[in-house]
Image 1 (cartoon, helix red, strand yellow):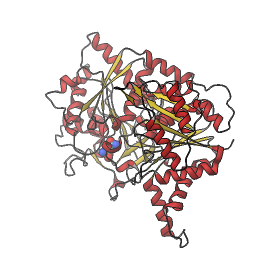
Image 2 (image 1 turned 60 degrees about the horizontal axis):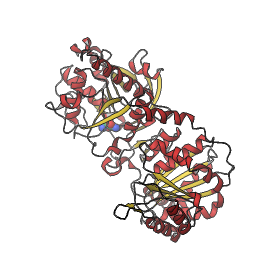
Image 3 (image 1 turned 120 degrees about the horizontal axis):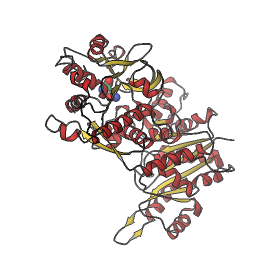
Image 4 (image 1 turned 180 degrees about the vertical axis):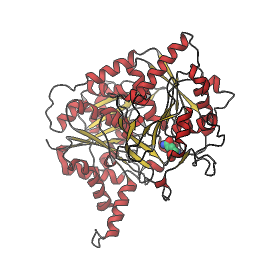
Length: 550
Ligand code: GLN
């Protein structure tokens, strides 16, 4: 079949969950056996979100091919089990960069380079790039921002032209918001009508409307919207607030959104999507009552999107272990020796978050020392793993000034140091060690047990690494380097075998946990947390005998 292009736009307000709707559509089409991918266009000038502070834009997600991407790509992967790449996330900055490079090369042969047609052509090229591979039946393109934003205009103009060129092989799905005015006890459809008018002014007629709402849309309101917006009544679909984002594909299917998309793109629907594994996950999610209490120690806790992939990975693993995730965000800047006991002792497991820079780092050390001494299951990710190494060096190896050269360039014990290849780098954007690299695990280690294999491949985002000069001292004192890059020997995983579960990874396992394939390390971590909690409630000692000497 011809590749079909589905464009997802948003109106009225931002944060309506275009990423979740796009992911849900992809999930349903994939469950029908189609080959699907999703891409996101972000209308900002940054080349990628890699240099953005998480407070600006939430987590920076990393694709296997080492692209620093918008967090929506994490949703795409978690909902669909497909791997995204650099081609799946494009910003205005990248579009302009490409056009300007072409101009400098002389590709435009003396023409005046303009937003229309040169920028819009570049956007169209990026949309179609994934289609050219012939690997996909459906390409879903999410346009970031809200219709009416100045920034989105070139993207919408490109969508208009593509819709014209592609005809029935394309579709526009517009997501809007229907507010409920409490005083009038009424759902208001006017903002949706205005938003569609705005799209129409730009020459785009939406084919499907998805209405975000906190209250069910009445059939009267649905009819009215269909009539005023030139959309078939059954193509007006509601998206009610739900307890879990993973219920959205099911609710969309109940309203036949996948059938409507197939019908409108001229594809004959065959049978039903194979959603049994997804429904199995949802059943577990809904029936899990017993909590597993995990504390996430990090400095961006005011904005939970900053740790999106981590919280989702924990939730996948808790669900498959028949537990309800009770996630507590613990501000590393506010954690100190006085409050650590009261904050951490109710927990069954502790996760030390990734991050950059000095702020909040001391709180991570306090948490790690407490967790190590109380033998609580602990997972350190990236900076979290580096902090595990530093804390161990200070407290067990007796190197009180041990540090990462990221925090103190003059530390006498640089147990974490800048990677050699990073030393000559001056540009900050896209220059970390990024993407998937191989890692070989020591047979018999906790990590190898968790994975059920010794050869894994995981994604990275860092500049600093474990300093190999200290490896023997760590090994001797009980912190083992059980995972390393087979080519460079860069330390990828550390653990303390005498402990219940104390493990740190230089890589980010959270980027590859999906609803249908929870990550083995998170599974193992949650199992350890459950076992620890069970022991606690049966009155087992909180210290394991081995922990005394560490
Ligand atoms: N700041 C550390 C480094 O660059 C850790 C990065 C991270 O946690 N993603 O190596």
